[in-house]
Amino acid sequence: MPYSRRLSSHFSALGRPNRAARQLPSISDISPRPSRRMEEASSTKSIGGSLSPKEALAWELFSPIHRILIVAVVAVAAADLQKSRLIWQLTKSLELRDFAPKLLQLPMWDLQRRLRRVQENIGRRSLRIERTRGREETTTTMGDEKIKDEALKILGVFQVLPRLVVFDLDYTLWPFYCECRSKREMPSLYPQAKGILYALKDKGVDIAIASRSPTPDIAKTFLDKLGMQSMFVAQEIFSSWTHKTEHFQRIHRRTGVPFNSMLFFDDEDRNIEAVSKMGVTSILVGNGVNLGALRQGLTMFTQNSAPSERNNQK
Image (cartoon, rainbow, N blue to C red; front, top):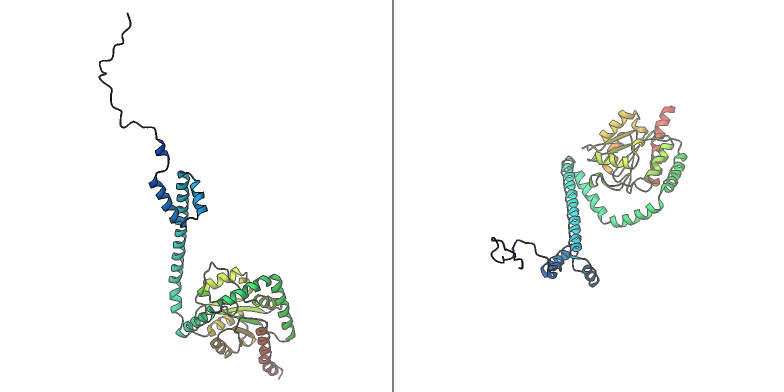
């Protein structure tokens, strides 16, 4: 007698498939859908614009996952770049906020002069940049040494030398206004300035700074970047309504050098006129300190020193 299997009393009929059960993916599900392709295409356009035929062909070689990853990476990079730009703009805004009160401390004629000087140099900036690039290629350490040797020859011609040579900064030692620059920038001097400074130091002549810059922090940062902080026996850098007469009073108290033993270089005629009345030999420079200005200053200093020497002999 064949064995008969007894069905469970709980089994009634074939049940319907469970809707919650996981189904195997079909081929149509694995392949990218048209909507997904459209999203990828729009993402591609947003990160790089329309693709060339070769770029489009290369893009098709990537799998959908790789395409999504590429779009995500580029999106993160773009967001990081935007963040950096916002940080830079915020930094510049803070610098402008801190700088504005300092500008308001300057007299109106000084503001007008600075604005006029900046406007005059905007048109010549491109030409100056090209010339500066050419000079930078040739004016290396050897170039500074050559200028230094020429300056030493000029100094050797004169029997009477000043005990102290004082320099302005803006448009005298370097071709810009400090307040128009950022501390993060790398400054540069006029081509012959550094060689002249080193020649004076080698000859035993002290040097100092008298500047009315409203941003002494930037000026001192630039001097430090140029490796010149320790060269000066006095650094009087502060905004003032006087035409540097207060600067020279401080320099005199600090160094003990008489005014008639000083030589001064500046690019502003008002400063030259005021300081000259104090007994300082003052030279107006039009394009920064150079060998010609040095020769002119030493010649005038010798002429101014001759009467005092004759009086001492009497």
